[in-house]
Length: 167
Image (cartoon, rainbow, N blue to C red; front, side, top):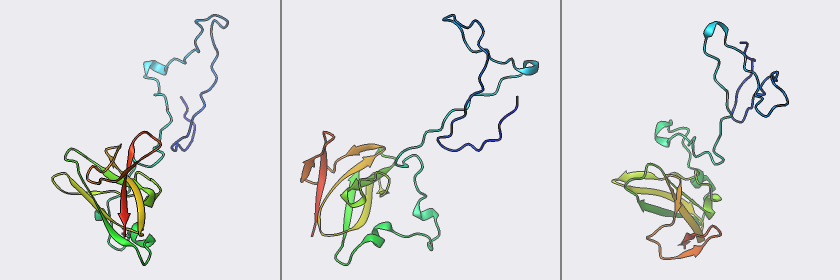
């Protein structure tokens, strides 16, 4: 069996060669499969690889694993002169990954990773401009509101967004 010299990337589809169909015209007609030479096992079927739209399956490397010269905080770069350092905190003892998404990062669920500081306490700090900011936590892929914040507003998905006022 000859393989095509094709570079496979995410979303690449291979077109199978057309095969002669035996018993054409009957309902039970199936394409004929070529016999494997010398009783060897036929090659496995190639399938398309799916990629997450938001890149959750391929998160960015941890800043701790990168050299200090490369690490730059995107939130710090976007901060204006009147921005305030804002603290986000969530207790989730069984969580493996926690992110925060909101109006301050265009609701991107993988943009702002939180770090686990001690026994299920997830924290992060962002420079936010003064004003009203809506947000949600993403705990192991599930969107959840901040239970410690009393102010919330309904969202179009049937849930509630937490609201933070930065002064």
